[in-house]
Image (cartoon, rainbow, N blue to C red):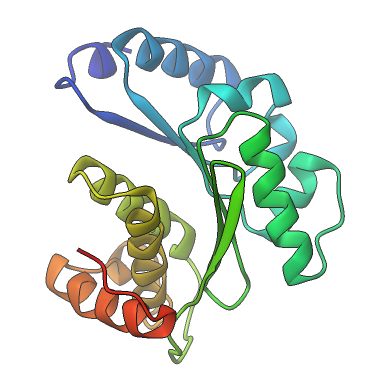
Length: 192
């Protein structure tokens, strides 16, 4: 917890559920004491209690993780939108349910919108979720809106799936900026 206690003000804690729950809970409590935003990739969604959701600024489950977390089947795009809205209603400020095609449903302020992914040749999906949440964190630290942060996540994921492996597939800032342009064009919006 010393790393969190000694982090600069306005830091963001990014976590998944691949480490022991007591360690995570201590990290969440320390981050909360510092006023840090907490972004969660719920890798093992069955470990998350609904009462914890309000502690998270953002959550980025894929469709299966959202289904496990909410106890609802998520078989359609409409189901994914409803899941994002439900996570938002349960207290998560930014709920992104990642879609199989690389896009996501983003729920903010009880409104959901789909963010489309640009078409890419998928080689390996390993690490795409980590790239998504890391890019979101960078965008939020840079003062971007939640919508822009989700678009950054979609862009990073689109880059990551084009290469084999995890860390070696993560984008550089230059690659990310170029892919963000493709995400903008897919969604008919220009990001700042």
